[in-house]
Image (cartoon, rainbow, N blue to C red; front, side):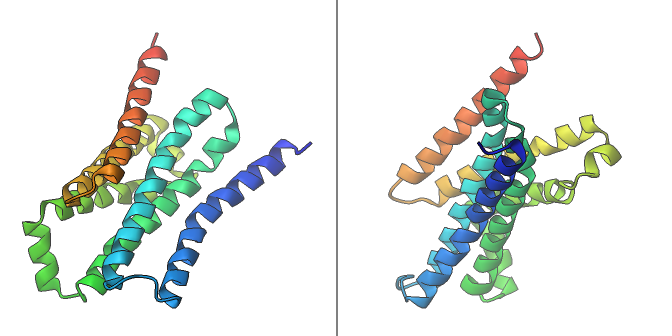
Length: 199
């Protein structure tokens, strides 16, 4: 039988793989010339989808803990959240650098003119204070109540990310619909759980 500490280490290793494997896959796509006619667009979409998936998984850790009671899930949640932030930051930087060639005139133009970019950028900005306060000392310095309220912004950021994808989509809405259903299910669980634990 595997003891609790070993299980936690194994789970954290799996979380590590969830952040690293997409980078290896993207590198393989680049080296094998499998990124299509527009590699920049492929990389932008890949990093964005990866970041949004990891962000929703981070939120899903809370209901998973509620249902299972296994503490290892909550121990690894910060790690997963930071990987989500990493990939969403990579998404923005890939768009700015590879797709827009750091042409700030066009970057600012698109930020003002394109609705989906404003939603995506707003969601990423909301994640910055969460990433900065993800360290173990932060809840004690801020106070647990303030820290918990701040980190509820992850729901707002995820909602903006899902809507960013929805507005960006032009033809096939299967993927954004799946993201939206998962996000709404997580929100409903959070609301119901909060109501039940107040009674």
